[in-house]
Amino acid sequence: MNKSAAPSTVRGLFWSLLDNFAFIGIQFLIGIILARILAPREFGLIGIIVAFTTVAQAIVDCGFPSALIRKVDCRQTDYSTVFYCNLGISLVLTLILILSAGAIAQVFKEPRLEHLIQAVSFCIVINAAGVIQRTIFIKRIDFREQMIVSVISALGAGSVGITLAYMGFGVWSLAIMMLLLSTLNTMFFWILSSWRPDLSFSYTSFREMFGFGSKLLVSGLIDSIYTNLYGIVIGKVFSVQELGYFTRAQQFQTVPSRNLAIIVTRVAYPKMATLQHDDVALRAYYRKLVRVLMYISFMLMFGLAATSKSLILFTIGPKWTESILYMQMLCLAGVLYPLSAVNLSIVQLRGRSGLFLIMEIMKKMMVIPVVAVGVFFGIQAMIKAIIVESIISFFINSSKSKQMTGYSSFDQLCDIAPSFAVAACMAAAVFAFGEVVTLPYAWMFLSQVALGIIVVVGLSKPLKLPEYEYFEAVAVRGVRKLCLGRGLRDWRS
Image 1 (cartoon, helix red, strand yellow):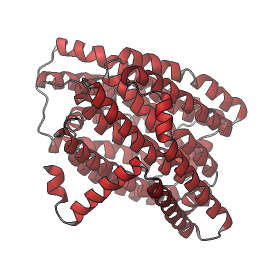
Image 2 (tube, one colour):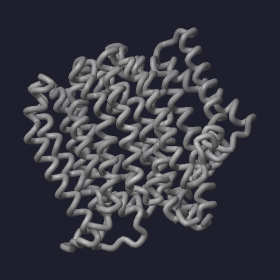
Image 3 (cartoon, helix red, strand yellow):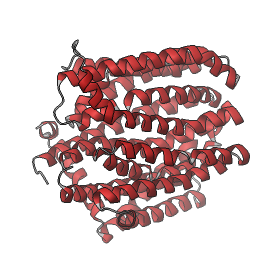
């Protein structure tokens, strides 16, 4: 392995973790405050809007940026070409949403949706204007600047959203917060980045990027439709309020699972790109990544499921009680998501974007029976079907990864089995504690977290799990440097 590249990866992982956890922490606190002020129905309305805008945003975020990250020798012309393509696509998508907002409102029988969708759709254009700057930072494995942007933007937008909610703006406080978050993110990316588009546009560059990125774009679009389809079905077949319960549970679950996948893949993908011609080094790096990633994923997701009752009742109150069971089940559905994402990144790394697309189509075809189960048997049955689908998706993704790295599904399961066992024991102890002990919700949650940490460390250290030792070493080294006042200089160097 290239030793000179290792510090930048660790540095990138550190800042990426700090970026996401700072952003997630701020968003989490803002969400708690807003959930106490607003009603589940208002979150359900935003859930419908997000379902449509996220699909459109996936078209902008997927494809071309991934092609830029993968390309080693990007030129100004490449960046400018992608910039204008993304901006043009975003303008078209925004116009489509604005024109179709009335029809969407009629389908859900919610008149307020029309103007809400029309307003929030401008987030697509605003985000597209900062895609290249963000891509350049990712390509450089430079997440420090992104952390600054995320934290300042989240604090600014969240403060405005909370103020508007207290003033009685209702669901519009959420919509305006989303618009402001996109605006601040893009504005700060332009301030911190020296890159600016010029008037160059290369059809050769476009064809090259499109050849690789178009299939990823379609894959991302399929995945986004698949992810948001459940919310649309719940909002239409059941009720907007029921969707509010589901989306709140989903937001709690998504914080660790999807963000963990984003953190690791956006740091690991550029690193793996440098090792793509060294099969031995790539497999070793890939295996280590899987073990550490799933150790964290198991502990977070199982722990979140075990503490869901005290967490929801403590943070957002009894009016969200119906979200508890949804959250517990969704945590089980999301535990393998980071592993599936990493397996897919290998297919993407090898330039097999056509195979990537075929795999996505195969997996997403399973949405038909899953949705059917939800329509006929209810939301809980649908989530159980999602759990089964997540397991099948892992085997599909890892089977293709084996062909490219020799790291099979069986090998991966063997590597992560000890972490699964530790997490299962921890979750059982934490859940049992919550059932037999009576405490105020805040103290119950804190006690469960403390117990969970004790059980995890108490089992991991005697077992000498390599992933725990690696994670502990990185964490201790990072904290020690920061405590000694050398952290920022060391991570920059």
